Length: 126
Length: 198
Image 1 (cartoon, rainbow over the protein chains, first blue to last red):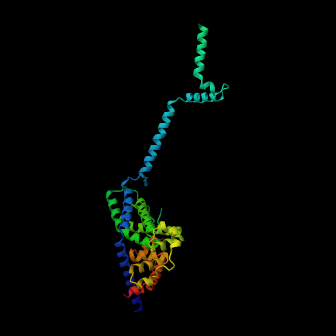
Image 2 (cartoon, each protein chain N blue to C red):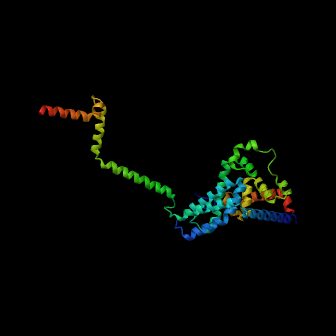
Image 3 (cartoon, chains in turn purple, blue):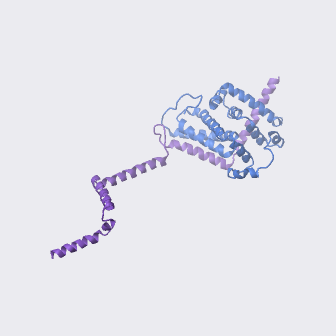
């Protein structure tokens, strides 16, 4: 008898709690419902993108990877337009400018000195 | 990632439009109760929403190709894992946030919480019952339960899981489920005695 009474109490308790919890979940505020709905849609939207070996990467990551590859390809292409040996010559020229005993002023005024030299040669030819 | 009690691996396959619609319907049907379970567990709305959202994402990412009749247990298992992780991370911090949430303060105001906090104790379930705040009394009583008793009770009594399903979701034995449930019911009987006799 006591056991039956205890069972009924438990049953009544569970029913009471369940009823109250159902009522509360049925009366959630608009803000909470909006957040839940958005979370659900964001989650389900993952299914809209085709799977790739069981994993999906977000669209922005794929776009970023494609862009990075394009930039790298462009850089390589531009670099390849200058022949390798010419690149070394350019580097060598720079070093020569920096280490020349005449100083950098010679190279800064190179056009003038070339003109002056031509004047001297013209004078000698004359 | 294997979920305790669920040994089979996901079957790889195409996701059909029908699966999307089924998943949408399933999540729409469970999201409110999931939020209720999470909110009772963590005591505040924001963390509860984060946990539910996380569980939704994990279910879709990892288990969308499973049979739809498995989604409920899988989802609740994921949710329980997230709740357990939350407890581990927020053991101390959560006590203050529950307090603030009960007082209706936003989390941004928590930095001033100590100065603004009143001196009286949080709501006592028996007193809330006396003032006819039934829902508040039940929430307070449920939050007063130890975490495992609370979650076992919610999964068994509210979500309607069997002892075996509850055990799988929580990663414990069926015997533990029955013990936790028995203790939760007895404690709730004491806390909610006034409501039962109305």
